[in-house]
Amino acid sequence: MGFVVGLDAGGTSTRALVLDLDGTRLGAGVAGGANPNSHPPELAAAHVNRALSAALDGLDAAKVESGVLGMAGSSKLTDPAVAALFERAWTSAGLRCPMRVITDCEAAFATGSASPDGTVLVAGTGSIAATITDHRLTATAGGYGWLLGDEGSAYWLGREAVRATLRALEDDRPDALTRAVLNLAGIPPRPAREAARHLITEANRVAPIVLAHYAPLVTAHAAAASAGAIIAEAVAILADLALTGRPDSADTPIVLVGSLVHAHPLGTLLRAELTARTRAPVRIATESSAGAAWLAAVEVLGDTAPRPN
Image: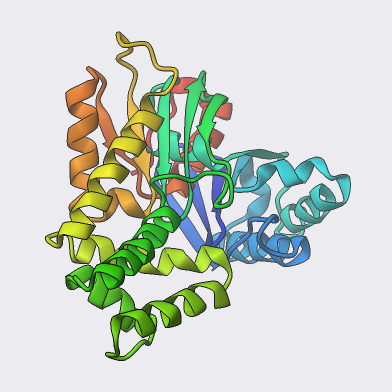
């Protein structure tokens, strides 16, 4: 019996999974991020090779019949030079099957549902919703990046936490969230106006995306009035994003993926909001490499391919 391999190549990490055709896990590998938009393409490709090599350790790579690479930043492979780097990473791991590249949205949806059609909402550092038709991405909403969008994302939550802190300092009405923001920023107790100036300086000292580091403070201090308001707005934004373009009568699954989906209470409230507003099942994806591997099995066996065990 042959094997299949799937990878989830994100900005932070790359995970590879090898399955046999009955869905049994045979090997797994982890390496650094492989989004070629946020990492040098040579390094991103090297991480793909490293994760593949670890997953295939002790297995005959020549037996892999189908492979799928789910990738954030997959559009970068339209550059022939970048595509060649990833092809070499693929073949030097011993694989002889073609490398099929899909978006991270397609891999995530396949992890959460075997349905060929539905919606996937990514709520992590960034935010995007995608329509999946016959296992393929056919439309998107959002996903414009931190500068132009990504509302409701971890970046957005972190930025809103800093903004809420600045407003609290203006009014001299700090709460648990604003005190936590100042602490994480390394700003010791001092007069409110002085603290605000230091926070503005600190926020502008680093790359904008680093504001996402403040996001966990929002859910950790959800009982604070400022945090509760941010969470409520994020839930409304993300629910609207997930339902963009979906007919009211649609009953295809909605799959949620990303760090915020697991952040209580935001994730719990988001699931409740979507359940209240649609007749569709709402599911959570956790391991997108499994979805990519299952799609590789679908290439061999069709939609009857067993789900990963």
